[in-house]
Amino acid sequence: MQKVWRLKQVIKLFLPPLFISVGKFIINGFTGLTSSEWEYVPEQWARAKRDPKIKGWNVQAVLDAYINKWPAFVESLNSTYPLGLSPEADPSQKLDLSSHNISMTYGYTLALAAQHKTQIQMLDWGGGIGHYYLIGQKLLPNVQIDYHCKDLPLLAEYGQKLFPEAHFYVDDSWRNRQYDFVLASSSLQYSEDWKKSFAQLAECTADYLFVTRLPVVHHVPSYVMVQRPYQYGYDTEYLGWCINRTEIIDYSRTLGLELVREFVIEYPPVIQGAPEQCDYWGFLFRKPNLADEIKPPIV
Image (cartoon, rainbow, N blue to C red; front, side, top):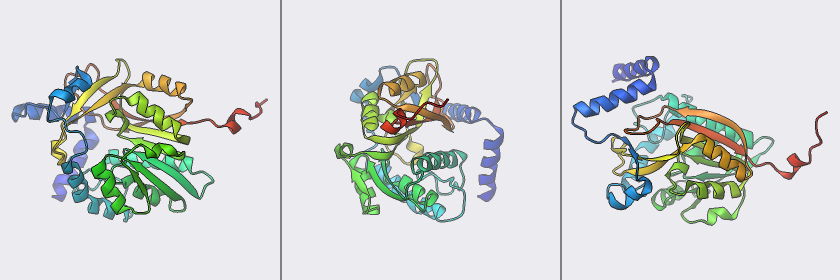
């Protein structure tokens, strides 16, 4: 098993991610799998009304997959091992560069928001059962995180049991406060009206907003794709946006946000039939405050 794992890592090191994804797509064709994991959806969100397999995230199979993999994830966090294990990953996969990059970029943005503070209010929008809460505690042990998480009922209710001191929401009451740091990781793309959701996140941001693990395209308009994540134990399919980079940046300006930094996050999939293949990026925004506006000019 150890030799197989090392072989996989060697392949990842020497083959570009695109080659690996294409290889999986070709293998699926030869093995009789007629549906690829990722596929372009020209009719956009209308597909959900006619396809019963598109159940979204609020299904028991998704929660069960998180529960089954949770002990290995916690064990990895409590060790000195690199933060390279995703709570969604196969526990036998001890190190993944994408997961490590996701954790480190999150840690950087959280630390930026927590500068000169001993406590920080954080909203994790679409945060599942709260794994970013644990990662944040490990990366910033001297900062108290007042953690708030909005997600679908099955995940949020389980997360509240895991972390009774935190605040989990299944309704819109999360919008009734301001947060020093707002995180939307692999979540904004699953909102049918992503601009409305983005505006709501901006409204409750007091300082920094980090939208990350977002599929973006650079040359074509935003489009919709479907993912079939059966290989991860998720007995469901869901729709999501690939959002045009210029569109989200331009829209952020209308919300009064300042773009601080962009990040390359993880390996992209190959989306069958897509007009342009996506990248997975992160965008760190900041809401300028009054103190910024009245600073004297530098001469």
